[in-house]
Length: 106
Image 1 (tube, rainbow, N blue to C red):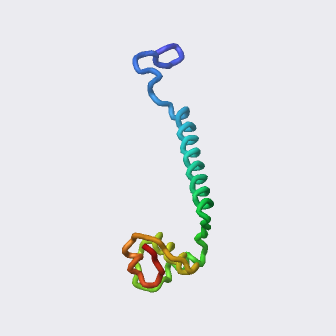
Image 2 (image 1 turned 90 degrees about the vertical axis):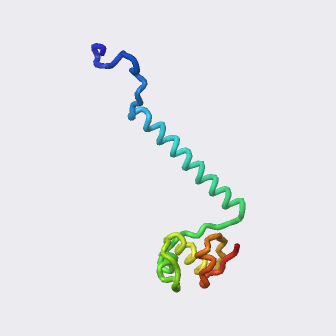
Image 3 (image 1 turned 45 degrees about the horizontal axis):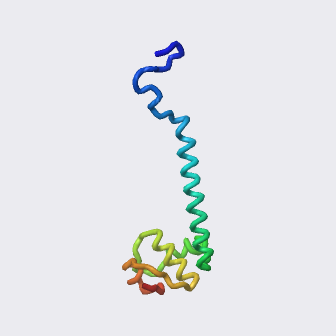
């Protein structure tokens, strides 16, 4: 130990200091998220697609679907969105493909 209380022995300075590494990690994650969002935006725009927000109508429809349908929330929202907007749902999910109340493509 030195007079200031810091170690000068073997391994000193090799331990990560969270107050110095966390902003770097946060900045890297933030960059990855921004890059991913931009890539998705460009992909949607390039293909001429539109995003459909999951509004209250879709959420309500998701939990009022004609039975029998399974309980997976994401599948219910996808099916409800397709039904409300008269869209074909492209999927390889056998449960959705076998559901008679939505038009599918695969």
